[in-house]
Amino acid sequence: MSEKLFYHELFPNAPRDKIVKKLLEAYADEWIAGYYYQLTAITIQGPNSETIAKHFLEEAEEEINKHSRLIAERLNQLNVDLPRDFSKLMEISGCKYPPIPNDPHDLDGWIIAAIKAEMCAINAYKELYELTHGVDPVTEELAEELLADETKHRTDLTDLLTKEGLKRLEEELGQQK
Ligand SMILES: [Fe+2]
Ligand SMILES: [Fe+2]
Image: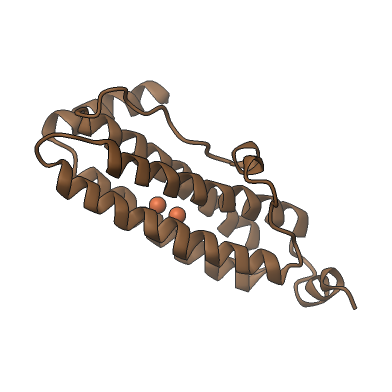
């Protein structure tokens, strides 16, 4: 029996194709976020940049070594091949990455980009949770865990902003609405 049949037998009401698409998008997002978080940690300069860099490195580690790995394992269980071409990741990414500042001293700007990335991830996992809720409890549980982690990331990053940075974030988000 193919894995596909197996999945349908276990979770007959789950929209498998939609779930797989979301998982692949998120898999790419996690690698991309991890890449940009490491880039941020290495690039930023100025007072306080060391503390902020440490935080970004820890999050990069979680995006790649925990999140992308857990998603990869779920895709593997669903018998879905991971992209074999790295450039494919940017193509299929659901969130890409927000624009980053040119100025390495613009710490708030780097943090704001990361907060926007986390907000996109939160939305994506909320959607994955809704797609799987009650119909694919294994993926549902994964979505729940990822959603909790990304919500924590967003909060932790927001706490790193200066007072002016917080105002800037509010203004930029206001403009997006
Ligand atoms: Fe993540
Ligand atoms: Fe995150």
